[in-house]
Length: 349
Image 1 (cartoon, rainbow, N blue to C red):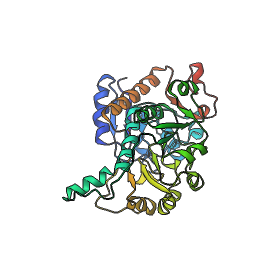
Image 2 (tube, one colour):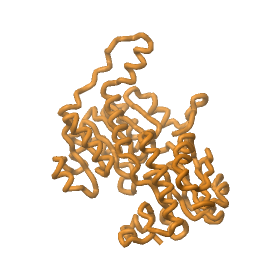
Image 3 (cartoon, rainbow, N blue to C red):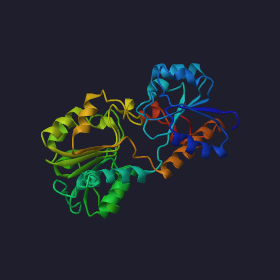
Image 4 (cartoon, helix red, strand yellow):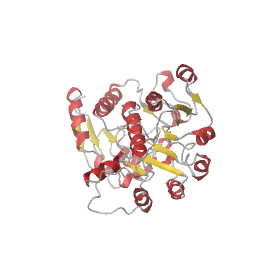
């Protein structure tokens, strides 16, 4: 693998730390850029065999054409999601690989931390005590025991979360477009229609991918079906929720609280420091003002174990590509159309 060159876009210091450590056994040539990948920066990839991109990089037609012209052979996503990739346009031009599983525990545990913080208001209690204010008025929460959690999406993350919440003694309702009935039978989880989750869940947590079917799954109509005071948690993708509708339902008191690790227009803000500036996104700025909204900056994946797995899987995907072997983590337009060649042990094209 000596001589193969990889350029990283939207790279942070922790990316350099973990990828450099893992690369000791691969011996690729790595270059890290702070810039996002977009039409203005794609020419920086000229001469690099691989572009390693992240969730907020733009991999649409102008960028794809630019990368192909510059000699790139592979897009290696160091993340699970790929809604930022135009799979139809890129098909036949560049192969795309991803990291489908880095640590379901990291994301599931972060979802629980959002739930617990919103419920028991520990973020507010911390701030009070720092100001020598030891009152507890306004900090009342509820017992998780006996409450109903609605889990939308029961992949690995959803299942880990279910196991955690069952430990609290919660009743679990689940929804998935492809329900795992064997799992349900073993664990006692009940798969139900979405409307039943909306009607009965005290906490709703989103763990499904963003697709045409799931975009704005949580909208004004679905929120009006929910129990008054429901808590909504999103550690999946920002566009699973119509944010303006969420704000309206927070304002009228129908939604009790929201914990968001993702935001539908996050690419301009998340992972960046605006502490000396201001936020020009009026919707995000409005969200931040709500005392019953907790926003974290897409940090659900951010554990040491997850970063180690991301680096190992990403570099392993790249090695497999240049070794000419089957790419188990490849994604493509055919996969989306259920015409995937992977089931036959072949590459997408």
